[in-house]
Length: 376
Image (cartoon, one colour):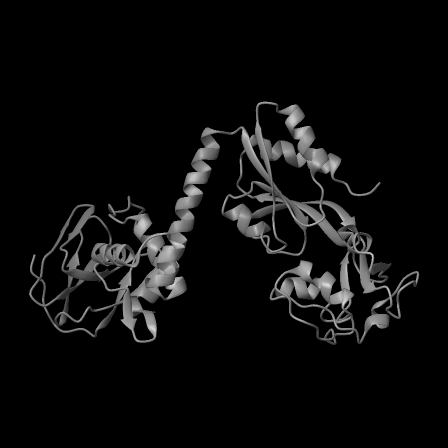
């Protein structure tokens, strides 16, 4: 089917059933386009081509485009769902591309992938051949993404995550006697895990310690099936069950002016620096920022890991607000804790994926509610 060939700009639009993105012409000739009605599909195919090729075929529910066609568009929101067209895309090559895009350097990316630079170059070239576009440019400053590469990168990461989730969920469905239980700093899950193993002796029950900012990603990436942790964190896509409250306390060095007091209020620490992290939700809750009157909390040192705050406090660079169950003051002889009055307690919760049907997850939730209720 021959298509008319008026020129179009070098960047054209490609529209799929659930995404919109741009693809730059590869420079190997003028781009040309044509519009073809696709029988039975409720939309038109718009094909952009390089000069010298005008092959595009549509028949029934199948669209066949020649290797020379660089993009297409034409989505009708009212069109019925249909099976996706066959895709020839090697996920191993996609993984190589995402690692290279992260490092922007073939040598470092090859080291991270435990391969050689020539091998990585060949794999990236194969991926570009499969996609029909150039993804990367080598420059004196290193490796840069082309416009097509910039578009493909977030889609590639989503594709890899979806593939990992598909594998994990399929395996979980085939082996419903496996569960991984995560927990964060100073939260003890031993009694609940023991009870789960006792009730399900044939189950494979694993535990894994997670960083303070890992619970959500660990659940969505299927590295954990249930996590005992503390709010706040983003809970979209999760089911969160509150297990118990924990009072918040102030931790200070032994020689601090407030050490030894029966309790303190926010007024007592109005000018005290408090550690900060990059997570605004964590800062809002654990720094109490803004303060009840609407003013900002005082500044403080930026830390990468909340566990670093103990060293800052011991050195006299800050004070910190922590959950009473964190035990910093009990584990370090140079620190002490003081009850903090007039603030809401923190909450220890059990988080799971909202759509998880693993019977062991449901069983652990009931056990956790009975066994992980906090100090009695």
